[in-house]
Image (cartoon, rainbow over all chains, first blue to last red; front, side, top):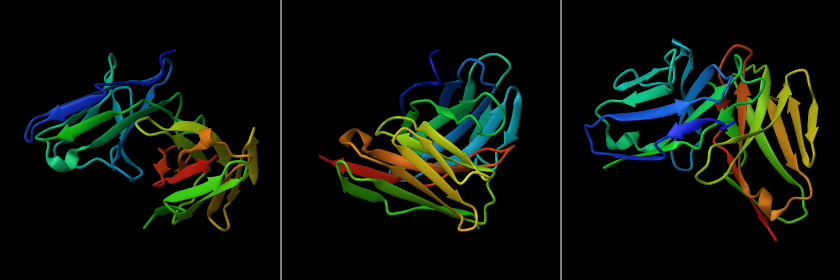
Length: 115
Length: 111
């Protein structure tokens, strides 16, 4: 059981480029959550997805950010036209059911640096 | 507005003492509360969950309390060890919703 796999671990993008972050949930988990963490700050909720559905995207900026969790393949967090303020660690978590009654399993994160 | 506040950004204690971390919340009515540990450069690791109808939960050297009247949870690590040094996050959850996290408390246990 490989746990939650995120890639890449580190991503450097120039301003204006696109960033694509991937997350493969734990085997058997169909619920995926994306969080953003700035240095010395807590995890900020972005979006909650199930297979082929966005359940809650209330924490995701309306512009430039999008997320998907297709029937096949990993969940993707996409940031278009990145700006310096997008630099952060992005964590993905998964759970087997709705809510967090079993606790979330987190990946090791993708550290995005915009130069 | 909804807020989750964890006591002081950093807590330093001596090895062998009990560490007590606080999580206060306002304008929430969570069904449960969780505590996670996060080491530098890593993702959070789930430690304990306590439901709204539970007063206390224990797991080895860890103890969590949940007071829905005070809107507060306390997280205790007894007989602390330097290996317990990490950032500890509390998170609030609802039955059909996602989790919201506090900013964390960085614990340092000195030998």
